[in-house]
Each structure stands twice: as C-alpha cells, then as structure tokens.
Amino acid sequence: MDKKLLKIGLLSLTGLFLFSCSDDNDTIPPKDTKLSPYISKVYDFLPAVGQFTNSLPSFTASDTKESMLAKVEKALIGPKNSMVSLGGYGGYIVFGFDHTVENKTGFMDFRIKGNAFKAASNPNSDNTEGGSSEPGIVLVSYDENKNGIPDDTWYEIAGSAYNSSIKDYEITYYKPNSNKEPISGNQEWEKDVEYIKWTDNQGNSGFKTKNMFHNQSYFPEWIKEDKITFRGTKLPNNAVNEGTESEPFWVSYAFEWGYADNLPNNENQSAIDIDWAVDKNGNKVHLKGIDFVKVYTGVNQEAGWLGEISTEITGAEDLHLLNNSIPTIQN
Ligand SMILES: [Ca+2]
Ligand SMILES: [Ca+2]
Ligand SMILES: [Ca+2]
Image (cartoon, rainbow, N blue to C red; front, side, top):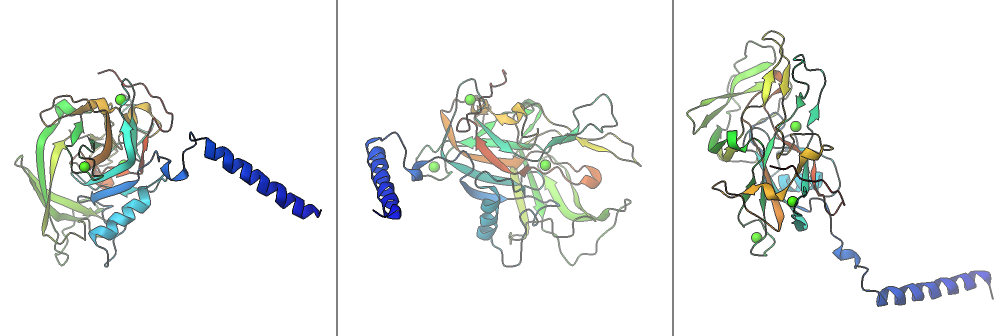
C-alpha cells in the first residue's frame, strides 16, 4: 500500500476512534456552551461631561446611540484591555456576563478593570498611597425574570465610603452652545471656564471647564436633548492638591474597597464581593449570583489641569471562572 494512503487510513481510523470516544463521554461540553469569564454584552452606555467623552470611544458625525454602544462592545467584550471613559459624575455603563456570576460566601466574586494606579511621587510624605483613582460606584442585578435583559432590581455595592456618601444625588448638565465665545481662565490650560453649565439638587451649580488638551465636545454628542440628568449616590471628593496654588500637584486617593477604577487591577481590594450589595434602603441583601453590572462615576470633582474625576473601564472578569480565589474583606 502507498505510504500516503496508509497514513490517511490511519488518520481516519483515529478520527473515528476519537469521534466514538467523545460520543460516549458526555462530560466534555460542546464548544458552544463554554462560558466566558469576561463581559459578553454591553446594554447601555452614557458618559457624562468629560474630557474623554466623544473620544473614548470616539464619536463621528454619523454615530448614534446604537453605533456608540457597538464601539463600547468592541472595546470591552472578551479578555481585552481597550478603554472607555464614563466622563464626570453620573456617566454610566451597563454590561453583563453570559452566565450568572456566583456569589461564593467568604470570597470576592468579580472584578471590574480600570486604569487606576499608585504613584510614589507624592510631595506629601504622610500619604504614600497616592496616584490616580477615579472611583465608580458599582450596582449589581440578578436576572430574576430570566428574560436575559437588565430590567430587574439593582442593588448598590456599599463600598468603604458608603456611609460618608450623599444618597439620591442628582446633577444636570446643559449642552454647550458651540458658537459661544470661550472665556479663558487665569491658568494657561483653562480654555473656557464657562464651558458647560451644571446644577445639582444640593443647591450647587457652576461650569465645567474646557481645557487646552482636549478640543472635542465634552457633552455626549449623540444626545439630542439640551440637557442630561444623572442620579445616584455621590462619593466624597477624593482628589487633593498636594502641591501649592502656583505649583499644583494633584493626587486622587483611593477608597479602601468596593469601587471600580479605584485600586490597581492586580490588587485584591479592587475585586468585589456580591455580599456587599444593599437595597435602596441600605439594608444588606444576599444574592446567589448576578447577571448584570452597572458602573457610574461616583465623584463630582475636577483635579486642576488633570480634569474631572472620571471612571474608566477596561473590562470585567468572573473570578470564579478564572479560578482566582480571593478571600473577602471582613466588614
Ligand atoms: Ca462572595
Ligand atoms: Ca431581566
Ligand atoms: Ca481612571
């Protein structure tokens, strides 16, 4: 027999053997039921006013809410590390997994990845934990009605700053008039200090400044309405000028635990325990697992020329599917 034919014969025999083998073994899951430990779908995205709004992801004149959502999905689905920015206070994203993330008692369950980092160059030697933290508040939801969409009850993850936060905060941003003459500020970088008007329900109001580093519109351009309102819990300001008035050195400090884009992705306390969830009255709830996650920027503050505190998201992961066992923090 021709050697080549023999080889084909053996291969097809092997194929038959493997086929019959896997046929008899139902513990090997078919490929299409393999679960992803990462974000599988993005349901909603609306950044607030910010210097990276309309640029992470980038808006073009033909874009709509749907096409912007598709760009966010392209950036975040799977084990990638592309980045989207939620802009200033209230800007949000809603995403989900292709399975229910289990709440394992005593363990962290999932992690939302961001670009927070720690830096040693803090001029204030009493504070070694400085760096860039832009905490986002996390909400979780279980698909109670099993319809695959996030129309169920949301529960807030009560992180370490929950008790020092303002509940039921509300802020409205007014769409800027692109023909308005910019009002430059005292600092060279302050291109327009009366750029975007805002008011909140605590009696505060002001303008968000446009800086010289980012020239696109800071108001989400696919929104046709002349104002947008965001509601939620507001965290205390976390950025401090550790320099001087003339030589500012802004440090945005991390909260201890329980937020997105707050601590570096490789730190255990950047992970979330579903058992930290509370209902709208602040009472602890016990969820067996969660299908959907919402994150919104939790701080309404500008850090000088660094711009607003804006939560960035680079992905999310189910720690259990990744066999990453992180004991929870007792609280
Ligand atoms: Ca847990
Ligand atoms: Ca549902
Ligand atoms: Ca960030």
